[in-house]
Length: 66
Image (cartoon, rainbow, N blue to C red):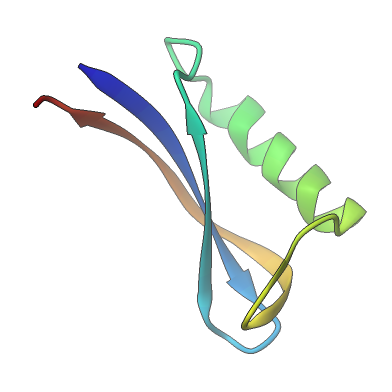
């Protein structure tokens, strides 16, 4: 069983962009995730085809069983 935390952002172009993190610490704290995502937006370290990240869209834990 593999788990990932998917962070979903809206770009300057209005498109969705995602970052995934393997093996998130559980239980996931929604307030901390949102705060971290806002810090990522403020720092601007990532760029996608749709442009810079401008807002938080959401986050989710994905569990895969193979």
